[in-house]
Figure 1 (cartoon, helix red, strand yellow):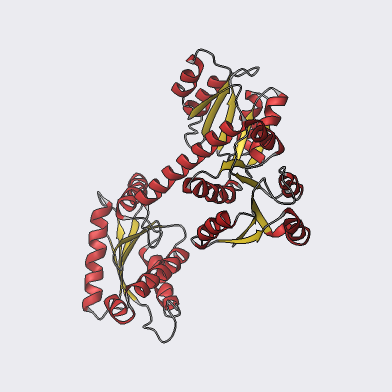
Figure 2: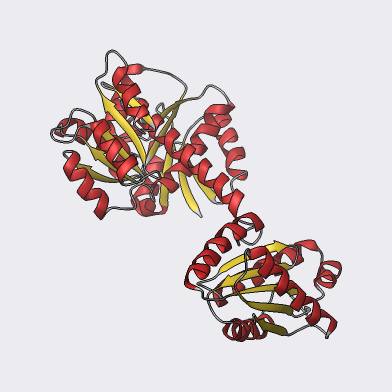
Length: 415
């Protein structure tokens, strides 16, 4: 749970913010109507606050003094005000506020909460600034630090390449073109074409009066370009947009590969990953094991306790399944049916399945007396032209188990 300090004296604005907070499961608010109240709260509990939303016009702080107070306690500060003043906005960004938002419409309040969520996520995001100008580098650092990003600095292209090796988890590179040594878009070419860093976001920056340089950057693989000089607000907006696009792409990729309920591979991804395992096995002439698992009498759980409890049982089983087979390719084939591809022998897979079956007896997927989880499984070990063939052979073994009374594992080896 994250705590947000709100310093606002308008009853209407407080009502709107309260309504927004009620829709947020992971946010709680502490409301103060004056700078004095906020100071008392910060003096005793500043470490508890993840961010602050403040009005500039308060009864005891009419000239925005609240911002200095909030920042003195190193709490990220979002200004929510009814008046727009460009000079004041620039001054506040130079002080290090997260953003300067005008109380115009519902969108303004939605944007404030989007910022709050973004601040939490930004703490996990690492940005490298490759810029030979010390003043420009420090300006970018100061602006992005207010948004809680992790920052790494490089003074030229060569240093940025070395630092990228040390900081392989860098999410975004802000890259000036006119650096000594390796110039900007040349570095983009190295990262994209030679090092295959397709996952790295790249934002080019440089003075570009004609527009040709920005086109060159993007053609060589940069994600976006920012012309110098730029203001703090434009920089943060561009960076946030890039990161959010990346997050959306990752979410879509996740949805395309993984089952939404259990987090295991879906069929499509399973056939792709299992196919890679099978190809290696074919090259080495080494058999692999494929298993098909079916939870016994699962319809009874849904009928007795309801589908939400059934879903919970599937999630608990999937966690235990993943724990039992940490180095194998696991899939939810559909409903209560699961599968795996493993380099291990059918005997080893069967032993692990037997242990998993015993562990499943202890899974408490809902409160009160419950039907213990159990499953039947078929394991086939061998080499074939496709994973689908091996899966079919394992499924035939599972069919035999079901006719023999369920609750055990049947194995078979090729030849």
